[in-house]
Picture 1 (cartoon, rainbow, N blue to C red):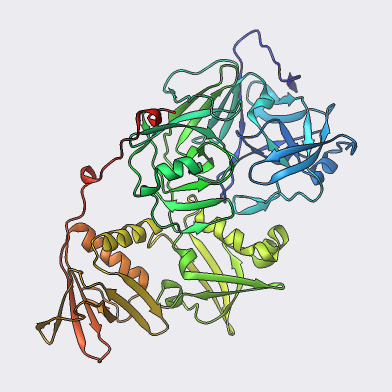
Picture 2: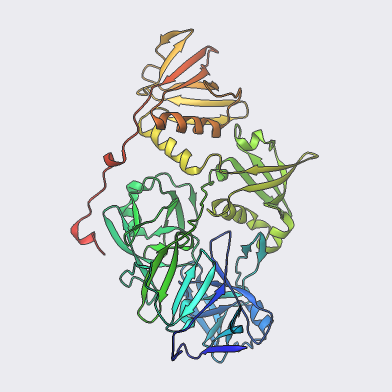
Length: 518
């Protein structure tokens, strides 16, 4: 066995050195997870957090590794997403060890010495999901535990490389100005705005904007679809082109956060590239991936399926006239499993009251393609599979389009009804028995949808409705709907083709000179 040891974050090599270790990606939050050991104990999974300083152990992991805790050495750490945490400092901790099998060197171990903080026993770390299995992480480690080395995170091969030389070929520098203490920052451009974003692989986000930048870009943040205590999620389709350095960064959603932090490029944003961090010079480089990730946007499921938990049981109900209702989730059904993970196992790791949190994380994860629910409706067992039939982006683009062009002002679904509201200025034309009619006058027109002309469905779902509008209106094609009014008369609604707004017609705001490059 060959050891390379880092003591007090200093390590010197007389020749070029490079060694790679495997990692896994947490399916729920996109975290990079590596295996580390202490005291030759069985290794445990740790989160590699570019936004962390040093190494952190959970209380349970410290007991597993045999790390003694001196409760007199307590220190308070301020964590933006958790508040102030009182942990225990271990100054003379045994080294953390990364190990791998190398063809020419056999068993290779990389030792890391340095202070370790142990979280208090009541501090909860959510499990990661690796290859469909829940795993409780033993803690988190920052890049600075490797000393002044070059660290490469290659998502293509899922390997973490530690080296003492910088690779130049095919790597593009994206280093930003220091924006958060001594952590790494990248230069981000949104339209005509340029700012430096804190690179935090420990935050499950794509791009999260600070409160100030959220205000500057608020005209592009349309209708939040999820709000947490400190974060609000928006669809990113209205954003002008986003770039990291000079490379386009495709985004599904953008967020805003309330903690006093700069804009943040999180774990899901990092998935688009391979990364190289020069820890001595504090420089950041990216490499285009050979295998770009396939990302999914299925957050519309959060709008059509509702889960509630009480005691040890969870029930699920569907929104009327949705694909969930068509699949057989009608009334209250008992939830048995999500993506082949039983309700009991989810409760063991998250607790009953946070089953909904797990479901939300799974639905919002852009690297999970399908959501499978096993339910019991009365005595009937069902497994319902939801793919990417209608993405939140498609629904949001259609909603924005019909709202901007004042085509439809409201959409409501009930058990046996699908109600459409047309404003007085709507371009829609109405006819009864083949004759044009004026409906509503100065008031909105309220009609009940029966079917969509050209769609083979006698009871269209809300997903089918939005998909039809997306495939026709956004392609400059007219749409015909068969409806009934409150008098029971059949009304043919013709929505004429409206030319979609061209990308070059969308104005990009020009900020004041002092905000062009901050």
